[in-house]
Length: 169
Ligand code: S3P
Image 1 (cartoon, rainbow, N blue to C red):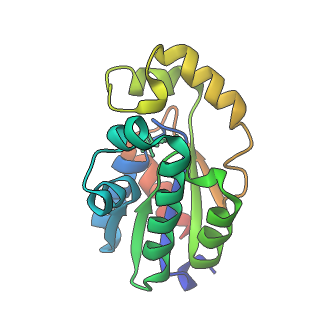
Image 2 (cartoon, rainbow, N blue to C red; image 1 turned 120 degrees about the vertical axis):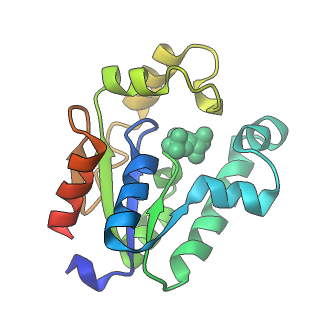
Image 3 (cartoon, rainbow, N blue to C red; image 1 turned 180 degrees about the vertical axis):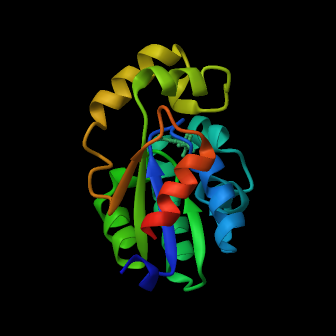
């Protein structure tokens, strides 16, 4: 069933391993890899953090929706790593499920905080990583439930997560 879809779409909170897992899956399956945030930056010609500060989060979400649709509509086989908030828009969730096999990567708060603590590029985590992660995790606690398949990456290596996904694919 999943193999009938052209795309594997990785969704999940920041720090759950979407980027690293997508790189490994792309190598192992020989599919091209597309990172939604990178595509947004290319399309806009500015960094995600600049889009947030200059235009605000609602404008970022509109761009995210447009760029995601263009990636998903192009029928080539690919692995897509999405940004943690791309699932907030119901239209995005529908598109992901229609055009791809959606895999949710989860992790507990402690592991997420460890992984994102030293990366200061994420606009939504400015001003107190622990507090921001806990608050957003609470707000988004069911946001990733729509996925076709889910893997808890807290205690797994990137290789183990990729193996687990490939076994289900
Ligand atoms: C966001 C996650 C980020 C990026 C933006 C917003 C979010 O992507 O899209 O900063 O709302 O969770 P990562 O999940 O790759 O960090």
